Image 1 (spheres, rainbow, N blue to C red):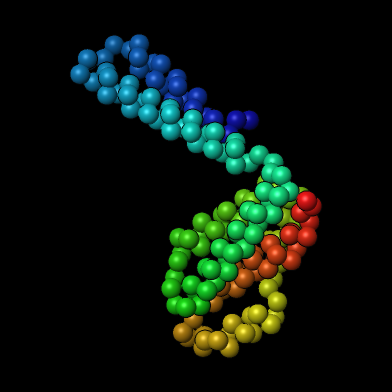
Image 2 (cartoon, helix red, strand yellow):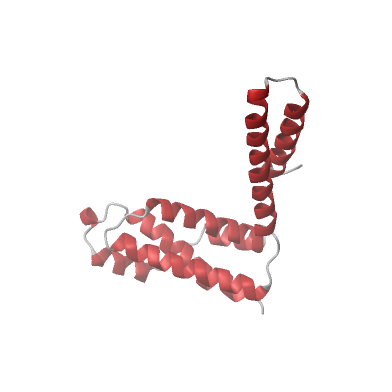
Amino acid sequence: MPSKQLWAVIVSVSFAIVLTFIPMPDRWRWPVVVCALLVTAFAGGAWVNETRRTQELKPVDKREKLDRLVRRGQRLTGQWVAGRRPKLRTWLWFSQVDGFVRSNFSLTFYDQFKNYSPDAGSVYSLALEKPKDEFPDFNTVISIMAKTQALQRRLKPEIRG
């Protein structure tokens, strides 16, 4: 079954071909064809990016990407603790981490990663750092910490290389 990006390429190309040969007023023809070709180019780029992103990485590349994700998670934790609320960055980081683990590790490790809970000591130190009423998104910080620790302690030892 083709991916969504490949379907977008197929539909865009067929749309551009059909628009080229269907009778249409001349003043509308070229803008519509150019727009269809731009959509085709964008969909093709998305498809190439998706296939490149999901290719199997070498162990060194896996370790470097994992380390980058861990550092980013630690920075996000610091930002949430400091009172800033980087919601979009956090959401993007969650999706990057989940995609990385899903495409580079087995189902067993993915399940361990999803069900990992952070150390009690780090949760307690975080709870002591700020009162709960000053910490509106405590669960988000705990989720970031859990994913960061799971990357460091469960998945990093599995990377050979």
